[in-house]
Image (spheres, rainbow, N blue to C red):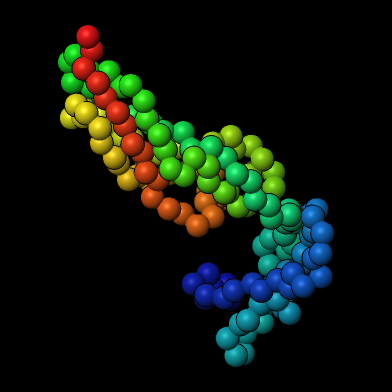
Length: 146
């Protein structure tokens, strides 16, 4: 009898993993909790291979993304961002590939002097997170062109 609707979980023991690299795990009855009176006939797949990496962190600059055209006759004189850098945390190979965090768009279409925006920042890799996420403060100074 084949029961595909039975919900069970495979529990793998990672306690012996102490360094980066690949590790293969066999899936058998010892790894699965089944309802009373049932037993595992076979697991598909019968084994699983996982790649383990060191967790690392790295500071990257925050890149501000602007949207919306400035009102006619105005130009962006300068802007500042606080914090200027954010700390990323994740698997070493993924974190090392990220050069910067990007803010949500800052809309300049209604700015005619000085304004401050509080936006989120993100990185494009779901395996990497920003340590201690904060709202990024972007202060812009717009001036009338002469």
